[in-house]
Length: 94
Image (tube, rainbow, N blue to C red):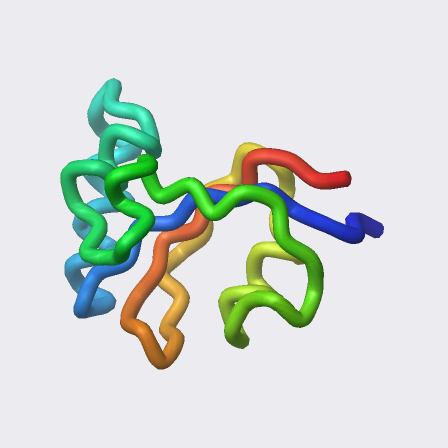
């Protein structure tokens, strides 16, 4: 099991907005990084949503639970936390 994962995320204010962005990602040739720069409302948007590597206990639930259960390269369905709604892309694990 991975001890650390590397992920990007897009943070928005509603589940509907997150679903709309995921659809747009699937239908366009834009990368997750480009979409994060354009759409994310979080402070990591300027870095394309890059959160770097992190271990268990460093992120809020259910964000952490979701990303550790994902396959590398996968984009999550919308995940709600105290900060809003996230789309998460797992990029690597170690």
